[in-house]
Length: 532
Image (cartoon, rainbow, N blue to C red):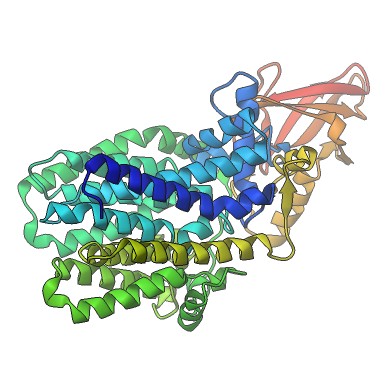
């Protein structure tokens, strides 16, 4: 391509930047955000950080500013480190514009991470390192599955985890190179993944385990030593997010995300293939796919491998990653007997289609290993990039025009702030001493808590928004209808994980997950403040 090292880096960076801008150009043109499946959930998490920062606190509050102010302890279970860029840009700019800019920057960083990590791998001939890394970055970060995470699904955690996967991969590969210490990127990469999306650590580890088994012939004492050190580093560095989670779940029962039947959540293999070829946007979880780009790259790569097998190096590695990509694709479907694992720990993945992220990675890497060894003219490269971005534009356009649209404009911030603080979820609610997995019980409790019902001396009363005042790790309620001179029992619409205390420092009772306090009032009304 280009010989000068610095010009080459500028050339690649320019392509990555233009590519990132093209992915998001239609989103910026819309002057707002269109909510994906999980977008409101993560925006509420961001808003918790924003309000905390604006009130002079670095760490986020415990579900008082957002999630309808019911004290939902989401940030105990979802690490929030990578939400700070969103929060900071929301404070500095229009919050919706800041959200879009942050996604754009993270997409651009994803291109750079992919390029720099793969470039560090040893391909035998240094002249191939740059083009292989370039093609991997293009094929991986333009894949429909990656773009799906940042747009239609709106899952910031998994999106960032997939961006970081190449770092984990590089660290693992460097375990086997005795001439470098880059193997430390294995625990560092996994720690970064853990701080973005804990479940992705489990999913990515399955790939590492398979690669470890494939490389069994190269196992040595030094590699085992590095592996053990990596595990120790990882465990030590994730302690700050694991320990609070364990302590919270020991103090009270917490409603963890419900897992469906894995066999039912797995994809129909024929529909997966059809939707991928058509580059269809997922209108439901059953229509999630890997996209046209990944399908075309796989087919073209197989053809090239058959025709030019003797002229291409690393054919065994290419075959291995194609097989791994195909394996993870099959595992995402009902072709695999998921019903056998429905009561196993693997059930925590919830949706087998989450494995498509690894499949996409493997196909992109195998394709890049081939394309990077071929002479491809600048005109052909330009043509390929134009076709890839045309696919991206079609995909994003379909996302923006989904019906019914849930669109929030830059120019209507009151509606945005209402959405950003009013998400309603069952997951991670406190259950007290009772397991609320009965659907009817869940619905009753959710409606009662999210609709701001308070129970005063056995009488159910609905509070208005003017009677509820969120603060940093505290909630204040204007309670009316008290019995002067008597001891009043008040059941508040505030989750109690065993940490809630009254203003006087008394520990609040936990009644099936709700906060219960007893107060003696001199009047029929009183302000009640609870800290959590």
